[in-house]
Length: 231
Length: 231
Image (cartoon, rainbow over the protein chains, first blue to last red):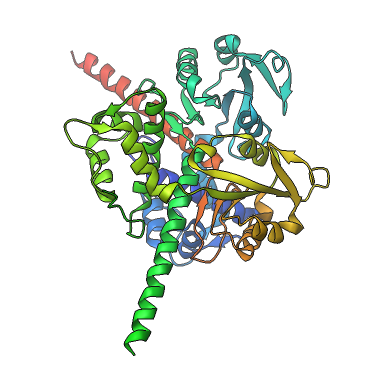
């Protein structure tokens, strides 16, 4: 049954949508919904039913068409794409400022098996404290702690000006992937995947969409006026 | 010169890339770099030079090919796509928990003209306080405050279980767009754009990429072994 292949060249937009489906399936499960059609799942995720079927087909055969998918089983299968055999991911946070602290305090990632083993900062007041159970170490100890705790994922929540230095440090210490919240593009070896999360860009996108919606409304109003004028 | 049209149907991936270019251009400007080629900009943003030229062409003619772009002018032009005539966007935050507080304290959005006029929560201890200059009101006062302050953008940073209720409230109060940090899909009128930001999905994507990178490395190792075995 598990016919999906992590090695195959799945495009990132597909991977993003699979992550979105996983979120939808998990919330259906919480609501004790047991079956879902591709149409319902598509509506929840904001895509077309064809897109859902196409995406799932890329990873193998999930459930039956027509009778819908078994929510629990599909959630398990899709989750397996992201963490094979229920793998748990060990993370570290670099930067214990407001964003780093918020991410450390949030339990959102625990659901999918992400666990913070350490946080790093250079502020002497923070070293030795804990943020939501996670111990804060001095950034100079990062390499030793990352190796000792077998950290696989480094999360960067430092100002843009130090993000590249931190990225180099994380790679040297042996992390296998990076989530970068600093609003700057970082360069690392091609072998180390980096996921940039620039929150301000999401606000810019919204600004664009609002202006487009306003423009459309204006155009529609003009058309209606023109049409009534022609009567 | 300003030939781009907000009303035209620009696909969201293009809009996302334009936001990324804007981030790159702003950091070049901070570094006092005055000219940039499409190749350099492409490298910074992690896309191909053809993609950069194609994207910019969609919005009009920016700078000259060959001699490169004037960084300051291109930044201004691209910024104009997102906030026409230097518009400032008035925002409100719903949910003054750790993520809401981190977003309110951060200055990242101020650069692009986003300003928080109010925050809302239901925790009596928080009402009447300020988070980084932004006053916290009771959620029951949201409608009145949003109208009074002419809030255009609502930011949702509440648990998934209350996100839909909050979205309804924001739309009723007249916000024109929503950035949703709650890990759940919210439904509002088609006229109101919603940008979902599910941070845990970014971690899932990274997990996928790490597993893919490991698989590839393994495959390469097997190929090398097979080749040396054939010698």
